[in-house]
Image 1: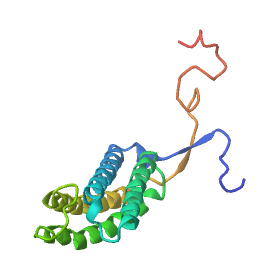
Image 2: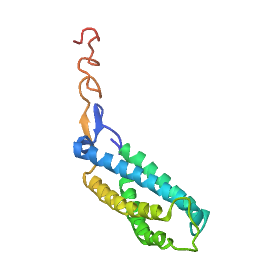
Image 3: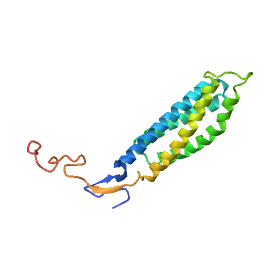
Image 4: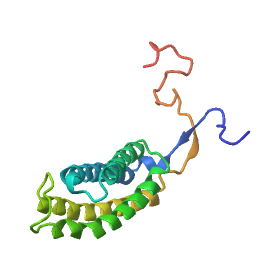
Length: 177
């Protein structure tokens, strides 16, 4: 039998994905990714007019928010590499947000152009993004340690993968009861 071939009568099973802790961790990670993306979009659109570097950095920021939404979808579907990429992205953005947050509060002086949102609000949203990114990094590390990627072969239960008793074993459906 070759690589990636199943033994006849067996199915792939991910035992660690059925645990309540894994399901809860997955939900927390998805919610943190969506929250991060929403906050990033609000900060970007609210501060777009005063963004240093112009449209280029704004588009990059929107692409990062879109990447977070894509990662949330992938993690919801138990995708393998999405956890590690989410961890790396959250640490990178944690560093960038921590470095950049002070510049929003430094704009609260005369002579600076006003963004679409008040400068204090944009700064507060940036401050909120910092612990959200830290929580995301911790949650994804916990998810990775729960070993969602472990696969095992197990016999297909009687009646097929759905486990319906009496169906699929040669008995007519009316007699299965």
